[in-house]
Length: 318
Image 1: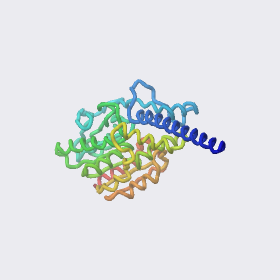
Image 2: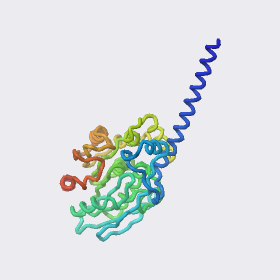
Image 3: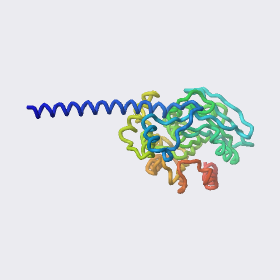
Image 4: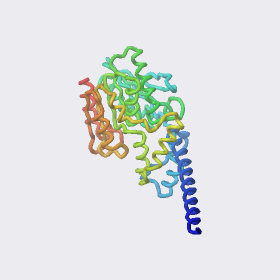
């Protein structure tokens, strides 16, 4: 009887220990998720890349989350431009840069923790090809409202707002360009709102919110399970959506327009499997271009000639 009694006590202790651990994990995930989806004051120093952190710093980051200052536009276009404010789910700020004798307009969407000034080099290439460009600050970034980001989920509505704005101005030839989070938002917007641009050019979109969250832990050699799932859960709760349903891979099935998908062969944040799944699910004319030596980066820096060649060919074709 004493043996049975001890077993019951040990079982209760184990059960309570597991409950306490589970509660603590959820508390950590809650604050981590908040920092992931809400930018800090621009004056706060950004947490260094995981590969450069000491073991103690990595542990602190895993427990308290990453300090990510609100992205601010660091420069303005050198060409004549117009600042446009559009009311979407948040007020968003855009720059319209017109090309001489334009043949259409490309709307440009930045990635996570980015802003429209970081896309000026891409805009310049589109302008040289004869296209007006509309550069967009997603909510929480640059000149747009707030500090919140939903990694492309709610930003999909802002993609629609920008597209509708150009349609209302009589533009007939509209292309959507997005990188990383911006690419995911483009795919979701087409899925949700049945947008019909002339085509889309997307760089390194992630396959799902869970996958891109799990990468954060793997980059620090930490197991993704179960914290990545908890982070996605609490991030969705805090921002008003079900995070596990956010899957650009699935949204790709609704894309029937011409698509140029670009990917870096050494991308540390998006896997080849995710890219192939998105590409295979696209249901319109499509092309996949891989820059074998590129990571999750701006392809114009080291692969400008090839990038311009592929984009020019795509735009001329469609």
